[in-house]
Length: 626
Image 1 (cartoon, rainbow, N blue to C red):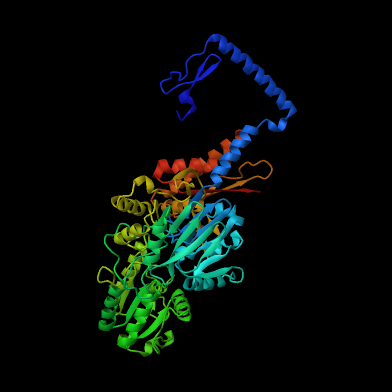
Image 2: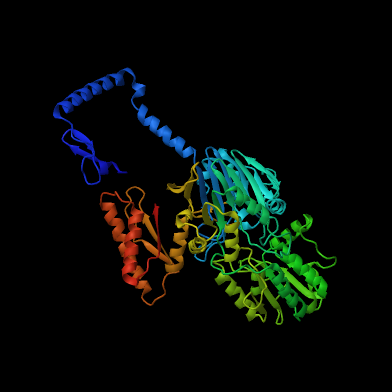
């Protein structure tokens, strides 16, 4: 009965409602009554046609009324729109919209995957936000990691610099990052803490403290016209954090007690059982290493794990080691954390790098970046022997105090192999507890769900298999699977005033936006596809020299190959390819010229190469008129 075709039956000129079996749901009327009604209907039709001419503005009144009604219905729904972070680890960004008010939570970047040649990082596709930038009331940043703040410098100018709300530590990192790109004076940065209440259009934002691998991390409680929404940010529950206090369990439980329509909770470690290990456990392992290692100790870590950096400073001071810092982001974050009071460095512990060779190896501790195998990082340069101040020597011990971000495993393995080849010893979490994740494992997720008790739980922050693992976990706790929507980037989850949520059939753009070099230049999927083709099959440049006046060939085309397959008869294949290209051009010249000649040449050469060597190189036709 929900579709017109299931309950409308045509019989001659009559239209009667029917049930699913095609049987009329009304009794047939006497023919005389039908005739009278038919005459009335025809008269009504004539009167309606007369009104059309007298009142033309009323012709589409019913249609307009329906359209307005649909718009009002849509306008009165809350829309949750993730445009990043739901098909990857990184690039986190979520839009929450009601009427003409939009709040954005986080605006991060993502490390490139192995097959993204030449890409430095990826950022969210903000096409939807650009078209509604006047409606953006603010961007809330949950913490200072680059996968939550790294895209700000690219998107803020395009969005007319909406205000950015962040805690003091996050504020400091954002301010430093934006100042490097001369945006510091244009951005409105507002500091918050967990006691802040921020009015953003029809929304009211409250915050609660969580533990993470960087200080001043918060979750968000957003009061909306349809009910309360919670965004967990990145979190874990640590009863002995290395910096600050444990998460604010009381405020989280209080939010749950007041009623949560939907909770957006991160899923990064949803596949890991039990509880995330405490920072105290890692501190004990590091103390053993710092105290018992005989040679130089090099610890590679994220520059944002300020608590762990503070632990290492104290341990170095306790054992008589001096600390040397290598890596630009490490230096910057230590300066910011010390200035804001999050890091206290014991006196005479830090030394300048130019004095590193004046101390015996067992008195040296080096803190460095590069734990993720980043190509230009300090640790990468050490592994290649190109670091000007720290050449790796036999007897050096290198600690990778981090977990591999998915996609970085190959790069980390390459650096580790290079370091071992130079005589260093590598220690990772497989050997001892030198790192703990900042993301909650399964027990942490169970506890967050139990405290919030949301009507709907939306797994966020993670690849699809992580979010499905989160869904399975919550189902076991008794939640109906229909109340655990699995979204993708660009999906729209609508929630009405009755607290009912459904995924819209509409989507917003969520394309792959890549950034290369120091500029804000953006390249798309087409460029990446071309680079992959060149990497796998090489390239052919096919040069045509033609007459200016008639387009006829001056001579046979010439083909130059780059990265092409090496084989004894490759010259013969290229000669044959010249004839294929020539024939394609001549056929186009003598034909109707409806098709694009360069595209025709590409297709014919790709087809020829596929047949001959089972590969399709990138074909670049060049036509020069003389």
